[in-house]
Each structure stands twice: as C-alpha cells, then as structure tokens.
Image (cartoon, rainbow, N blue to C red):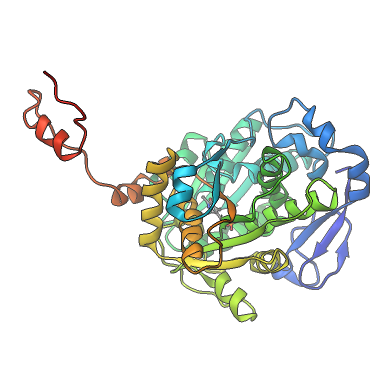
Length: 418
Ligand SMILES: *Cc1c(COP(=O)(O)O)cnc(C)c1O
C-alpha cells in the first residue's frame, strides 16, 4: 500500500482515502472506485532494469503497482507470469500480421481471475477476516475458492444455475460452501451482496471491490515486459463485467506514465452477441441498459455489468473499438485456436480471438497490424461447449478393421509401406 494515494470515483470524480470502501459513499453501488497511486514515487523505486533483475516470476514482481502492503502474507499458490507465445498460423487465419496468445488458462485454477482473487485473499487476511465470499459466473468463484484454500480462509460462493459443472466441481474440491442459485448471475450477485453486508464477510466481487481489479492489471504488465516494452498495435480482450479490459488499459497507461513504453496499444473489447450491453453503451454514448444475457460463453454472460463505465472509458481513451461475435464464431474460434496454436480456450477466452478475426473482416484492425489475444480461461473448464465445436473420434474395433480406409480419408498415409 506504500504508493496508494486514494480511491477515485469514476462517476462523480470524488476522491477518498484508501480505507475499507467498496463503492463511492455518495453514488452508492454504481459508484465504482479506482485506486490511484503516487507514480512519481513508484518511478523512483521501480525501473525496467530493476524489474529485469527480479527473480520473482509471478504477479507479485509488480507489487509497487498493487494495493498490498510490503509485509503482506501472500498465497502459496503461484499467480501469473503465464506464457506469451507467438501464434503464426493462427495469425494467418485471423488475418493479422503478428499475433501473440497470452495463455492465462495456465494460472493455478485455470483462469485470469486468479490475479484478482489473489489480491482478494491478501486483503481479507490483512483485515483479519476469516471468510471471503464471491458471486460469479464460475471462474472468479473457482479461483476465489482455490486462493482461499491456499491461505487457510473459508469461502462462501454463489453461482448461477448455468455455471459449468467443471467450475462448480472445482469449488467443492477447494472446500467452498457453494450455493447454486436457481437464477441468473445478477441474482447470485445480489444474494452475495446482501450476505456480505449481513455477516461482514470479505467481498471478493471484483466488479465492485476496487482492489481486486488491480490484480488483473498484472496480465498486461507481464505482456509489456514479455514483449520487451514494445506493445502490439492491439489488445483483444473479451468483456463481461468490464473489469479485465479496464485493468489491462490501466496497466498500459501506467507503463506509459512510468516511461516503460513509448506508445500504448488500442483495446479491442469483444462481447458475445447475446450479452453485449457494453458494446451497445460504447456505440450509443448513452448509459448502460441492462439486458437478459444469452450466450454459451458463460464467463461473459453478464446482463448488468458493474464496470461498464470503466470499460467504455478504457476503450475510448485507447482509441480502440468494441465488437460482437456470435456463439458460432466463438465455437469456431475454440476449434481453430486449438488446431493452429495448441492452446485450448474456454468459450469466453476464444471470444477474444473470434473478435479479432471479425475486426479484421470489418477493417477495424489492419492486416499488417499486430495483436495480443488474452486467453482468459482454460478450455478444460467447459468441455460441454468445446465438444459441440469439434467432431467425434473414430470408433475402432480391437482388430483395427477399417483403420487403413480412415487414414486414407484423413490424408494421413504419406507413403505406402512396401
Ligand atoms: C471473467 C472473465 C472474462 C471477462 O472479464 P470481465 O472482467 O468480467 O470483463 C473473460 N473471460 C473469462 C474466461 C473470464 O473468466
């Protein structure tokens, strides 16, 4: 917390001291707060060179830019420093000059949400809270439960009915008390809010907890460092509540103001057609209109995004764009991303790739431009959707009858045995 200066309301611009606040006391629940830092102080303490010398290969290597105390107790589960890999074949298919995948499915519990949850458990511990609660479409919950288990905290989780089985199973494995709400994410969110107020649990809902989204910044700090401070033209990020894209932009702004990068990339926010209230708000310039979400990409099926304003501001400031893709395009992207890069993305993660492809088609992104697509979660978290995107295996009897014909059909016989 050394460098935290205060909390700034993105709605009314009021500034508050950094205390135990979730939302702006003047604006209420819609008054999303943003953490402000003393960047001059950070610049003196943290330089690119000093960073390069740090052995810590986790998100904590950027601790000066995080709202945690120097003596904070950190979870034992590793967080962040996920691989950034070039994806040349995928770039050709998507239609861009250069494409990198940032595979955040390789976090401990399989999604980018670990970055926020790790801050959540550190803050809960700092406040001597023993119980952390969260409402989530799935990944925030499973990562909250995993990080809580790693820190010896208890977790109470509210998930909507549609949360995929693998994510719910993760929760139970990590020992969370799990409520499956017969309703939407919005309803689960409300129940969690009320319970946190009533019982005084630490509230991990990153949409409203200003500290948690700071953790999500680290994905972009890592990308900056992994690209040797030469960011791509575009950053493709899928958008649900809007926290991730806002955090990614904030990190690039910070890198710029610290003098680490010369120019910032443009943000490409991607939503599913059936859950695109932020795209609508971005294009209309009007306040957000809640919708009833309908998409296979459960992690971004958010009808009442809390962070829409931060997301819209981020995309505007970056000179970026919002784009929608259909469920079919998402399923297609799961398939071709797997085939052309070896990365298995969950639907909400493949959405970023699908959006990039569509943005090239619509000439928003140029064919010579470079991009990073953030793979926000592992495909193993939602096998159901993935299975609809691919074919079935060939059934074979133990005597192997028909094998040769299948191989021929698949063009797999390159030379005939003598
Ligand atoms: C949460 C999540 C997102 C979107 O993040 P928001 O902060 O809600 O916009 C995208 N992909 C995956 C896999 C997620 O879990």
